[in-house]
Amino acid sequence: MRSEPSKVRSTTMSIAVNPEYETLCHECEILREELTALALEREHLCSTVIPNLKAEYQVKIGVKEYELFIKKCELQRIRRKIELIQAALNRMEPVTIAAVEAKLDAEFAEWQEKIERMAGDIKAAEYLQAQEKMSHQDHQQLQKMFRQIAKRLHPDINPGLSEEQQRLWLRASTAYKEGDSNGLLAVSLMLEDFPEAPLPTAVDELTERRDVLKRQINSALAVIDGVRKTFPLNQLHDISNPEWITGKQDELNLVITEMNGQIASVSEILSFMAGGMVHGKSTATH
Image (tube, rainbow, N blue to C red; front, top):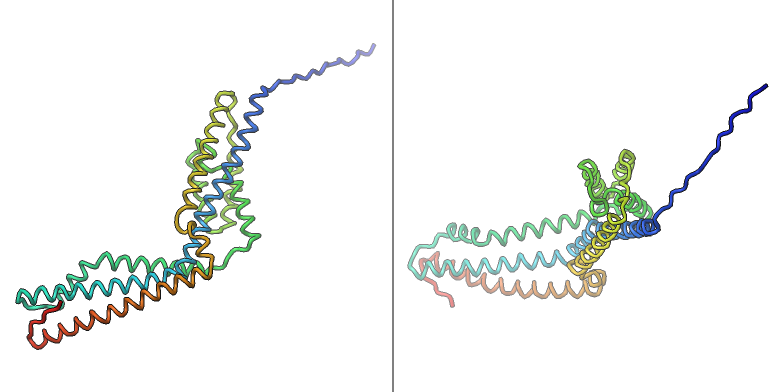
């Protein structure tokens, strides 16, 4: 007699999931998405919008402010030179122009450093504006890749990152700032070696995680608001307004013209004093 094949009873076990835990998981996911969006907004403002806006300001207004500051420095230096020469003459001391110039160089060293910084800012702005701009489509793709990476590696969204993950995040941030899509793609591929960190399994721990995310969102909102209230974003409307730009340029040109007149006046006084010194006369100025 053939034996009947044994019958195996298959049973399925269902595990009931705590509804509160499911709700918390859903909340955390929504909050992580919101925090990711805020992190990207801040990164976009700081790495793209602000540098481009500053560059536009420097090229249109900064060059005039630079010219005005040079004139101001020139005027103050001539006035100070007159003071030093007159003080020496009043004391019946010989005047050594080389010594006067050396003293002026020392006194105006900080002014000169500022002039050099302003010149450097203008040069950097001109360089930035001369760079080829990324197309809207390419920029959208760049942001999409960076968003996916930020959700996995941003330290505010993912506490407890390893050192290697932190290095990857820095690499991704640099690539995003430089518009390097290939760099972001490389980071994305490397992320495959790092499994996504699971959410806490206990309700109380998950509740704490949700509350932390809420605090981080409030903090991020405050930071972005602060960024928007500082230069150059607080002058976004003006810098984007051609009429305001023209008016500001005219205003600065007027001050520069007035400054040139003052420089001419004190230069005449200095020339008169120098003429008196050449002829061995003691010249007083008032």
